[in-house]
Image 1 (cartoon, chains in turn blue, orange):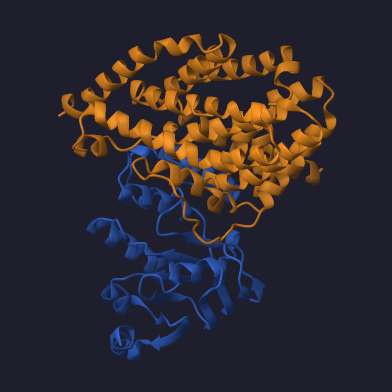
Image 2: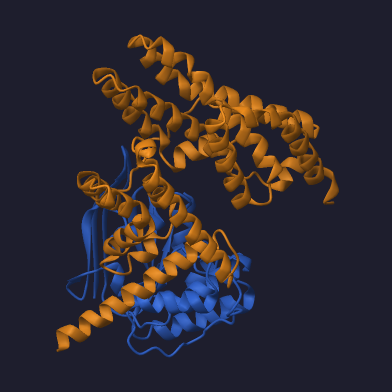
Length: 210
Length: 315
């Protein structure tokens, strides 16, 4: 279903990722972990073509494009000058949604300017916008950051629903969340990726902190 | 028929996205729903273009300055990632910049400067297609009392203007065109003004142990020395070409940035008013041979008073 091959990703002279090979055969929740600066966000951006790299990503034998993925970065690029409702409308035009029935997962003030929102509310607004379209793959970079307990609960439930038909790649520093729901976890360390099946999760911390 | 429908839908989507992008621009300056504000800004912008048209001979060497805004806006925008959701996002950006600069494009069109229009449009295309740079962080010698010197030079990549200024000086010497050197000095002065259009956090001012007077003095000192640093390459070039008369004029470069520091603290809470007064003050200082500068002692007093209000009165 999803095939990622990244031979090399450099920023200037600095090598960030090397020889990354990821194969995902079925829908589900897949975790990506690693220390700060070890390339989680860079990996996601390479997969989506947002960063240039030597390599490619294919979803169902077709090159994976940003337009075909539900991408939520750690700090969503949201417009402070729009209201939540205006942002949803703007986003549906970007996604080119012909028939649009708004599916509000998180409650946010609709007619208030986003600049007046807290970090968590901005993230909820962005998630609401992204989840308007069904994608075969969702890439969520630290989606739980900034969200309150109830929103984390709602988001995880929604991700579980999505994972029945789509691949959901999540990065997080909260291992317990990933252990509970992930089908597989990918550990980024020393520019490479190591794969852990559900029955191997107990080894992750040893590898991560060694 | 189907093709026409698709084209209609495509145009409608494009128009809606562009409309939002302009709403976002306006809301950076005025509050939501302020239609009169929008109208006034548009009228002011059109009036500026009309003034340039009417006095084209005076402005012809500086006309590119009116298109520089697009470069700054493009380099600091953080929404490219979201716009990339549309495959034709580069067309959207190109149209946005074209509409934004349209009044000045029309000025050039009526003045039959077709080559310049073409050059600006090609430059915009190159700007939109330029790969994201991952350059090493350049270390600047700027005094850090005002951090926005570093921030502006890094954010807007202002260092890249200097080779362009060097070329302009060379052309000015080669073709004996004094105006180009004046243009370089004007650009240099505007570069030095940019950090003062930014605002430090009010908490920073409150937490600073200096009195309002000392704080302003340090800000002025900071602007003076940092302007001096960026003037060095131009001074060296003017010395190399033995342009002693023009070299004397380098003193003028310092005036606008220093005035702008004072204006910043007079209009600390109103960025738009600050920009308008700055524009009016500098243009009247140029046309009245510096006479408005006699207001400086009063302006300094007002700036200190305002700083005191920010420091102590808001608790």
